[in-house]
Length: 620
Image 1: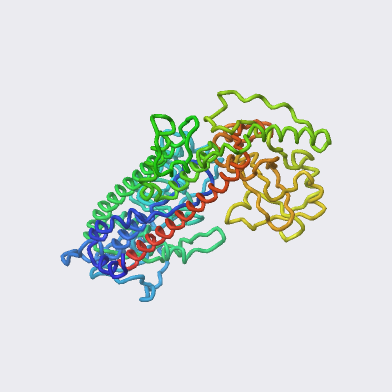
Image 2: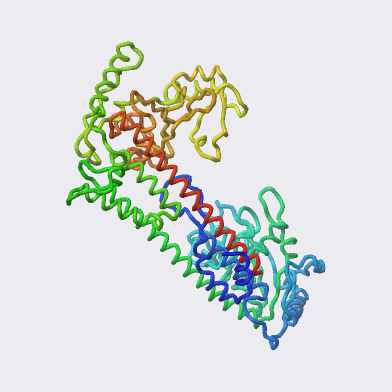
């Protein structure tokens, strides 16, 4: 959308802003960090989030519903509030508040319609914070009671219009005099810590609450949901955060009381909240629909790509699929071709999200190690011959006392073979083709290691390579060791082409060691996998494509661990050596294409994010 189109759009009504830009609000999706594994949501609906902010900003600026000249102006309500507070002071029910500074024109964040006024928060109600209760006392005295007022802590408050968590198991007896009570319709907001100014909500019943929360009890004719709506605007958070102090981050009650709030006429407040409720329900529906669409899209991608991985004998490769005039019957080969053609025909509509491209990458790796990525060559030396040569080389190394004789590996059963292999391939145990070397921690003991090795932050002789050094964020964030320590950790020396694998935490996740330009040593709690007469890059592709299979051998409850023996017993699909190199080359080519897809997607998403921000900025 061109810039002039945005300017035309924002002059329209709130309904038009929403309905005529639905494609923008729903397609502006922000990708979250791709680190870690699992099924947690990898995206946030940035467009709908910005739409919610826009609705609330328009609401508190008097731009969401039309004004009515017949409405009683806000000044009348404010006079009534001031009179009632004065009476409460006279009756000694509240303390006389300190005089608040006069509001200057420079303080006002925007212009208000006729009949509205800016006031300080303390002018519209009574502000107070809650009580501090230590965890032990809370557990012993206030948990498991059958009667009392709910005690609301910061964790029990959401980030907007959601209900407070009253069923947290903590009740304060009504006769406890030291606890402050926030009455029904009080508005809460977090005043300290990472959630300060963000977590907020309305009490739908009388409560006691924690000392890191502020409550404001507003006048009966003041709409508490209008206060909450204002708390949720970027304008309010900007004022709130500017008044925060301290390392933890917090705002004093005095500073909080001085923050500004726009005050509409009471009748308009009710109209505004009715419209906010209506439009927030629309946002909820849009959010649910968009999330469902993304989930359905990902399910379709996984289903179509999963069809490529179904077991079949002597399957054709993707390279053979590209043959101009293939001829097939109802064999598994035909199934594979048809499955790929379904993917290829809809490529542009399937791979439009980071999740779908990641699934494509994983499928490429799985196809690679199943022999379905490149064409086989009958002239290649079969894998069986390669295994015989590796066994002979190992026997010689044992005879020369360069390596220790390992325990015989168990024979591979038919149940362990996950798929049919092409001609010339063979199944073997991972321990047959590589050495699994533990870090020095397992061989020398932690005490010996600590006495001889000091990790340094400044550049020294060798890098102590950790798994965090394989992420873009921490690629060069090294710890170093001295030359003496490097030589002391003889078994942990690393070289380009080695593979390292996590033992604990995320056991089975693997990393390929590239040349870092200086000596490298293996950090603790990792395995070093060093190949013998096979492509280490192909082994790494296999490990990356079979993470779930490998992780299945990990044990433990609170901390998952995989053993050296389990790694050596992993079943491995071994192609001829020449085909290993062809597979690696093809994977590199296809991964580069996937990265290009991701880059273009990121550019498009950035454009969408900027577009939503531009609409919001110009609309308010």
